[in-house]
Structure formats: C-alpha cells, structure tokens
Length: 436
Image (cartoon, rainbow, N blue to C red; front, side, top):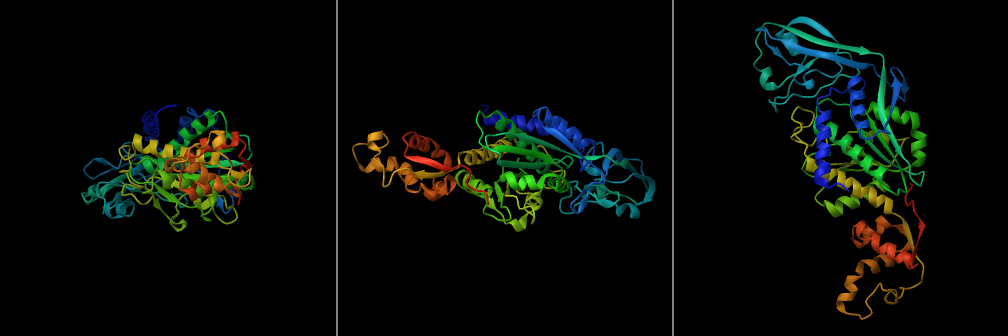
C-alpha cells in the first residue's frame, strides 16, 4: 500500500494536470477532464445526455465552446486575456466583438473590492450574456476611451457528460460517492473533490473483499446531479444506504461536516464517528448551510442518505470562487488527509454490523485465552474494550453505535470482534445495519 505522502503527491500532480483546463457545465473541457480521470480509472463510463433533454424541472443546456477572449485598452494593451487565466471571462459568455466606451464596459466587468488582487469566478449559465472578470486593482487603472472587447465563443447543441463507475461487492446495497468537475481553474473548490474521489475509487476497486457495491459519479454541479437523478433516482433510493458529497478536500485547514437533511443516516453516523475520533476539532454545519449537490440528493422525493465531508467548507475560506484558489492552497498533505478520512469512513461502513451475544451472562473468557487467569487491578483494564463490547452485543445496536457508546474508534474493535466470533461468543444477526 502506498504511503500517504506518496499518494498526496500523486493526487496533487493530477490536480496540476487538470488545473489549466477550462471546464463548464457542458463542453469539451469537461470531456477532456474525464478523459484524464479515465487514465487512472479505465472502467469509468462516460455518459451523455443531449441538449434540450428535460430533467425534472430543468433542461440540459447547450455546450459552451470558447477559443479566446480579451479586451484591448485605448492604449493598445491586451487585458483580461482568457489565455492568461480562464477565469477572466464570465462562464457561458456569448460571442462579442465590438468597440465600447469605458462606461458601457463597466456594466460587463466583475471585480472584488475587498480582494483587489483576485479574479472572481462568475457564470451566466441560463441567461445569454457576456462579461469579463478582472482584479479590482487593475479595474481601478482603466482610463476613459474606446475599448475593443472580443469573446470568441459559441453555444452549441451537444451533450452534458458525466462519469460513472460501479464497483461491485457481495451486496447489491450501495455506498455512493459523488463529486463535481465543472468549474474552471480553481483547485480546492473544483479539483480536490473529484481527485480524492478518483483515488478512493482506485483503492476500493483494489480491495480483495467488498461487502457493499460502490457507485462513484463525477458530474457537473447542480444540473449534473439533477440530470443523473432523473435517470436512476428510483434505483438509487432502493439500493443506496450511505452516500457522500466530496468537495473542498485539499487545504491544510480544518475538517468540516455537513449533515444530510435527515441528519441521522448511516452516512452521518459513519462520518461523525471518524471525525470525532481522528479530527475532534472539525467544524460541524447545519443542513441550512448546504450549497452543493447534497441539495439534490437529499431533496424531498429523492431523500438519499448523503452528507458532505470536507476540509474548509465551500464559501468559508477567503480564496473561494477566485483565482486565489490555486495549486498553492491545495497541498499534498491536505489531499492525503481527506483521502485517509474517507478511507476510515468506508472501512467503518464495511465493518459495521449488528452483533448478538450467543451465551447468557458473561462468558468464561479465561479458558479461551481471552482474559488473564489471575485477576489483578490491571487485568480488567486490559480487556475493557472487549468486555464493554460484549455488554452491548444485544442484537439491537450496530457496531458504530456500540463504538460510540463505549467511546472507542471502530478500527480498534475489529480484531476483538473476530476473536469473539472465532470462539462463537458473538454472531452477526444482520450485516446491513441501517436502511432507513
């Protein structure tokens, strides 16, 4: 197994490969990005939904194709060059090539006075418009005169793409991992989630034993999850027992948790169990703070058990949706940390089961080599986890609940459970512990 340090650098290298690509909801940039992920996940299946398709209350938009964009100042200088930063042009801008006064140009410029060195990220997906994003410092230097504005773009009928990977397990019940890949060059908000999801999928596929089936999707945010749900929501509702929206997973700041709408699903329990034991300084949010695809997965009528695990939550770090969200903000250690947290969550789910003690009263553990035959003050403490586990194996609590009750991380109980099973002192009455 690769060390976290090496995996972190591999994931960061993938971020570097993806970073320059101009992605959007639909178009060549998204397809190019999926092609890069397929080099790591060859079985990732790319699906297409045609422009104009109705998906619940939404319609699949046209593809956005852009070759170049820039502004020529009255002095002849080129500014807001798309080829310098793809954030300089408002996403889904329609084509334009015209001379314009500074006053009229200002109506199409976007900047951040509170972050004068940052280029903001702005889109206009569902209203035909055009615009440029500029640092506020540069905006304040613009002089009166005639400006030439050029956006060489087009909106074309095509398809919305998404990637899907099904990793089969012994059970038809599924663990669902979702991330989005539709923003241009922003490293934490955009790339860290799908990169961690890709490497998690690679690890899951390598496991010699999987109880659950895993479904991994890489989609455009919002319209992608809505479109995906419109094709298979009944199947997902039938099979998904826990799901996670993976976003903003690459910085070295705190961890964050945003619950499902119901707040008490198996996904919530597993995520909280891992965070409380391994990163107790994590920040917890309310479902009222939602802002990503958990909005669709948890919506009434869909009601999937999906929560979000993040580093610093979207909208809560100053670089969010700006050019400052770059490859310096996302680090190998930040990516590796998020990967390890989600590994622990998945392992907790795989080990989770409902346990039933076979014998009434405490079993005689000493004769089975599971308890010291000479009782001392220390001997009870040495087997406290084993005894406390047995005390709650009544067939009503799953292992995550028991681990929470006795205040022990679930990974410290797995060897104990196996020994107790080997001696036929406990049995599993049901593996899939949580389907509500």
